[in-house]
Amino acid sequence: MSFLYKADPVRGAEWARLFAEQAPDIPFHCWPDYGAAEQVRYLAAWLPPENLASQFPNVEVVFSVGAGIDQFDFSLLPPDIPVVRMIEPGIAVGMVEYVTHAVLAIHRQSHLYARLQREQRWQEHPIKPAASCRIGVLGLGVMGQSVLSKLRDFGFPCAGWSRSAHALDGVDCYAGEDALPAFLARSDILICLLPLTQHTRGILNRKLFNALPAGAAVINVGRGGHLDEAALLEALASGQLSSATLDVCEIEPLPAGHPFWEHPNIVLTPHIASMTQPASAVEVVLDNIRRHQSGQPLIGLVDRSLGY
Ligand code: GLV
Image 1 (spheres, rainbow, N blue to C red):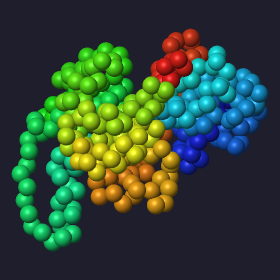
Image 2 (image 1 turned 90 degrees about the horizontal axis):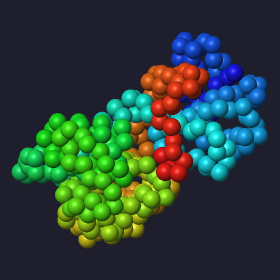
Image 3 (image 1 turned 135 degrees about the horizontal axis):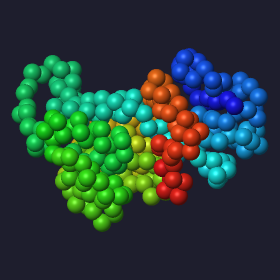
Image 4 (image 1 turned 60 degrees about the vertical axis):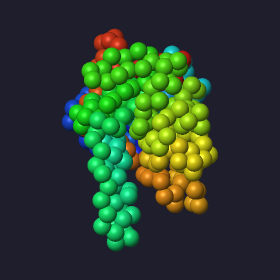
């Protein structure tokens, strides 16, 4: 029985060290050195091998090394193999840092002051209380909930929207398609933390932007596929949106010459909002392996019909 890791090799070396320490009974291999293929029972990958079923016929569980699993081609994964997405505290912590930083930068007008400094202008603008800046988070998974609980502590009025009903302390929760307009109408800063599925692809579109208060800001830390890029440029040009903070794009790396690069009201980062942290990831993967071995439910098991 062995474990195969197929993703970033530098972090793979770290996983190998942690496995040797914490699970010396599980032989660990880092792609492309997979050892005896028929021994591989567990696979952790960003992208599973295309011929998984024939090459590794005894795989019992596939783990995504990322929080998202939209990069997986499920038609290549036998339907009976459980797929587990990465739910580990390290990713949530990184996401909370990134989103908090982005929200505070918008709220405290960091962009404006950076420009004023470049122009050598000493000019003050009123500071608005956090209570006047309403935050809305699309997606109430572990990351959405962690982000909301941090932002709530700053005094921002917080709301969250998701497909299914949730109850979160100090957060107004909206659920389902019908509740979306009311949620959007009260979101001055909208944060997308949804999984990318057939239902959420292109959700950040003209209709959605028009349903936000005029001058709202959007932060996309979901996937590039959530965003209609042309609609964003249009909404920024009309002033319906004041800014966009984008950590993800439809095509990554963003192609040279793309209008987002030099847009004065777009803040762009190269998909670094958060990363799986080997120490905490290995802990949850090992816990899931033990669960699998003892017939307990897996944490983060993907429902293929929902796409997350
Ligand atoms: C990164 O985007 C991830 O899915 O973890």
